Length: 331
Image (cartoon, rainbow, N blue to C red; front, top):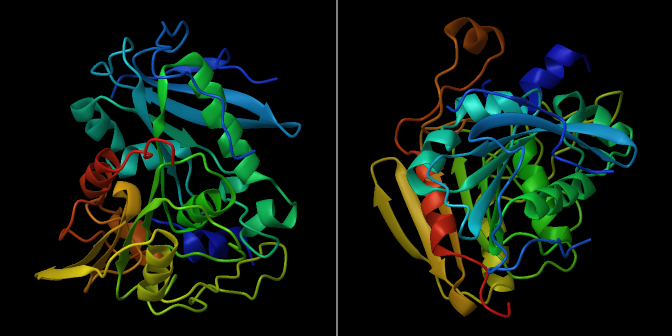
């Protein structure tokens, strides 16, 4: 399976320190972070977008950090980790999905990490070279969150993770394997592999019913190769409604309330300790980030990419869900 095939397969359109950076234009389960009263200055972390590296498991890993001018460092801040899809990058995710503009409006920090070889490992059979090489991407993301939490006043009750496609697979793995995040927002993705003993967490899942790469109805998508070869891709997730039902059980939720507005159907359940589980189905959408930047026409045709739906702004929807669901006290 070559690089171009992997690109089409899962992508959406297109010692640790923050000390190594280039400044851009503004535009284990328990993770160290400052307490709610531990706000402090952030030397070397400029306003706007900046690039950094950390070393985890002997590998130098890159990421982008967005600090909006609206973020008040005198107070503990929310942090969103945005995980790109396969063949994407942190820079691509920053440009494509509108998170920096959302952060400007609402005053939170955003991390845009880079997967090795433009993919994330979620198990030995997915995805791509990182899976084949046994990369510990859960370890990378948790260490990254800890590192940023030591440099900036991150609120440990308001750490959130979102991702599309392969990035959504890693987001689910993170909430399965750690207690780092208060909520997850997964787009055009699923849960694959083992998730034996997940702890309660608020879950928002957005999925196009016409998605053929990570099918809404579950099972292998059109780019699945059974997890074999140099770029293994095995996607064996359940149907989206079944996945949502599983998290309702984990979170001790009531029955979902279902509403439909045009092509968008929401099934929203209130859960114990103020958590929530919500499934948003976009009837006519494929494998894409609703409200994201349109694909270049040539790339959309060459790579058979689905155009972003305009029926929903996924970024604003996910942020509003996150803001409403911090980690419960003592939970």
